[in-house]
Image (cartoon, rainbow over all chains, first blue to last red; front, side, top):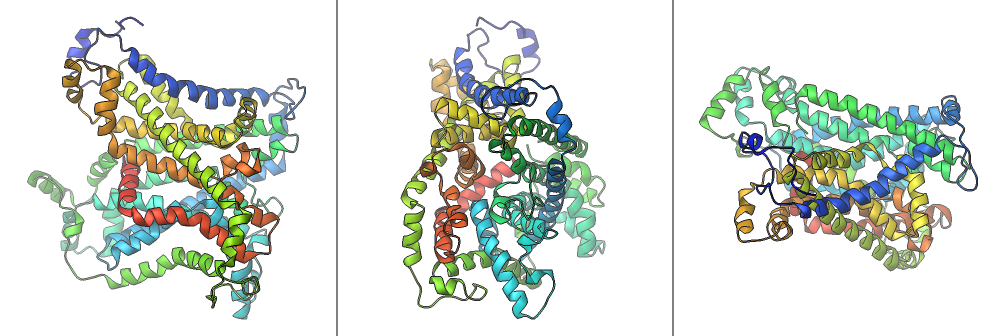
Length: 310
Length: 307
């Protein structure tokens, strides 16, 4: 660990703002020691399991005992497995719907909270509460509301229709309950980002628009939304990343049912623990990883086009 | 480090460009908070109505928790019970072994915060101050890459690994929570460290302080606002997590507060009053802390949200 002569002092002189140690000649051993624990633990607890998982996806390992390599057999079976395919369809569809619901509602709430209103502090305080509540616990509460309270209210009103029964047991509607509770929990974070964005828009912009005779609606579409584009992208990226991993709230509401209609990819991977599908579900995890990367990269490209610096 | 570039860029397409230019010349934006005008009552009313979507489920939890078993199965569940029945809390307390699961949750969350603060801030400092060295630059992207590796992807091997090491309990959960907080925390710290001028460290170095001393005596205290932000995110993520402890922890008596709530889905499925008393007890600690430290928490979270 002697001096790193790769960068000559000459190049440093032309770049006075560079974040480099001043004492180039001194051996910065402490820096290595500071970085080492993070790198070592990270490699051991994340990279290593990831590689082991990828390796086992090529075997017929059932979770214990002997195993042998079976090539890409697991992958081949996976792509024709209706259970896995439906988990992907559900998870991606759910993520898209939820991200739209969360962003529209959070934007409306942010506009409202940024307007000249009364009770601003109290309302703000209330809207942020879901952020500190555990997803599984609030899902259990909503479970009762959807399965018992809502049907009995609808019945007492004398209205029939699908809502007079528990929507959690309804194969076509159960996913809606998951969207609602996930949105309930995710809106605060999106709201915080939008509020920060709205407060960065100077007042003069609106004053000028008002002078030109722009209606509030027009002001929103012509001024607010374009200026908020970067924040919309950030919220979309963060949202999709979280929603793809949906698990806690689904466990609390439907546990994947009825049937497997609300089974997320995360849930299907976890079945690998007890069904002897260990290697098979590892293949699923590898594909899930690729899907996550592709979705994230697509979004990052979108961000770059928008010129946002993350 | 905010999305400001996007704003200024897209502003060019907005008719208000001249106004913006004028403002820039005048120096400094005028923020919206000093805007006058009458109260917007329709907006106030709509927001109050919208806030019910948060308040009603919480009221419902409260109302159910104070019911007797007979009341709990009647009607919609929204009626407030009178007289209030406090017995459910005692039952919930013993059924979930509340002191135990609460302590385990707290230890994991505190351990996660401490571990995240120390590991991420040290690594970020080393990276930020040696950005022109390949090893450090690559380490940054290596740590950040974990953003693309959600827990479900590595869950099965991690369960095996923690079991092999004999830490398939609170210790393993804490370590993994720290690992999964790393990317985000390093991102936040690095952004913040770039704004701390190196000159600050200079005089201490001249006085003969080592890098280690410079970090702990000068830099770490300067990181205080980011420490708060990183700590709040780490605490909430760890405290509220269900997925990881439910999979990693093999001994049911070592489970966290959110995970033990599932006994009401299995064994005590009809005792709704006890279940809701238990849910309330699980929610209350963070809600109380949030209400008490609301300003501080909001500041911290906002700092993380816009970086």
